[in-house]
Image 1: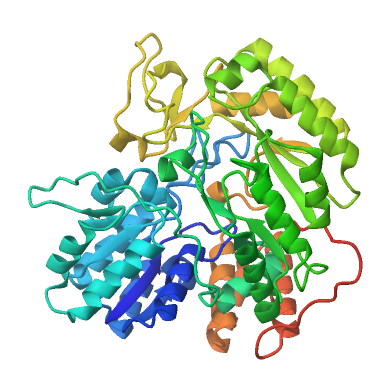
Image 2: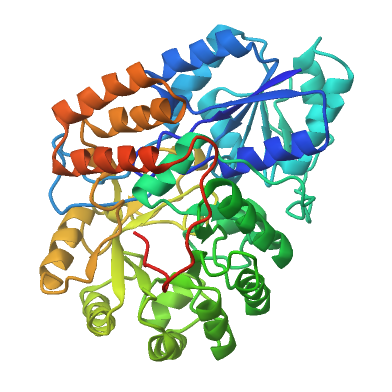
Length: 558
């Protein structure tokens, strides 16, 4: 049985590896199932993703496709105070439209081909995504256990009548979804717990292009400590995905880090959990201790997203010992009333306590980051001024602060289940309704198209106001993707990504063709990135990468 693992990720600025699919492929190999897997991200491998997918389908002839939907969009509301060339009011980049182009290719290639969707974005609103993409099957929640059970059941019966058998098996699996004969999508059974405790032999691989991306662009390697989040923040889909926390043994996390260092020479990791210190900081301390005692401890650095609370002196010591170079915190507001509105588990006093401890105890090589949400319900001129004062004080102490101008309203979140004032809702084309209309609930299906809530002014106006107020603060800026903005993507970036893929797979002529496009269309940033790519490729040995030197203190990675 042949299975195509289709990584449907159009994001171009920071091409991250398909960690979830690699975990699934490792599990399939570890269980010795009679299944042949191949993997593809058409958005990365060609400037014509649809044509590339057709080429892959023709060459691999899959019996089943696993479609991973990582994100609905990039969630960056405003990366610049000025509108883009098309006059867009917001900078959120929609990913479902290009992904729908891929599912159309799959249907055209073989209408009977079973396509099973999954991934974090899919899990947050599975029925809506299935309808939007024209799909009949899916797995909500962590997919490793359910998908391998599906493959085991299907492989035992050969490749005949796969659609009917796929529907029958999915109906019995945790998180399994299959469209009914009347077109409806039943509620999925809840996912199982314990799915992250994989056998130690099932360590995920990293494709050579993502190794190059990591080294040439400083993209950290994902390292899962746990899944899910116990909080119920008003705007966030993480609790929608899991509704609980599923921890992974600390020893398994450290073993996987050693695997990446030993096999690929990758030493900087992102602990890929929504908030690494939740629900209890003891689990994170155990992970830190395992990393600090691991074979390559002196070479490894990491960063992660933290909740303000809990954060103790013991945790701070563990972060230093394990070389956490960049703890990042989301401080949604500096006002208890607004924090309650967001359903946060901390208040302003907790913010002051955590950052007081953190800034007193941090070593010189630790860079502290804070993300702030402006424009939320209840935002006013007074709350803006209060937050600006707090941010300036943090920036004066060396904290790097980034902020968002508005909240993306995602389906099934508490924010989406709240009647919202239409005069503060915006799509790319502008305000959604005229002022004076009464607040209303918005159907989940309508929220797949990017919708932003922003008060007390539109996102661009708020961005311009804040940019002016922080013009003398070099440590403060927009939440965006860095020097390259996906909403205003330069013409040289897609060819550079495709060149990376070709180079990683030894396709010299195709690499040269793409590089010529980069040099012809690129600005100084693009040319520097291309140069760094070839420097990293030239430095890599033919098989694997050497374990890096452990000399010196950890560097702060970009």
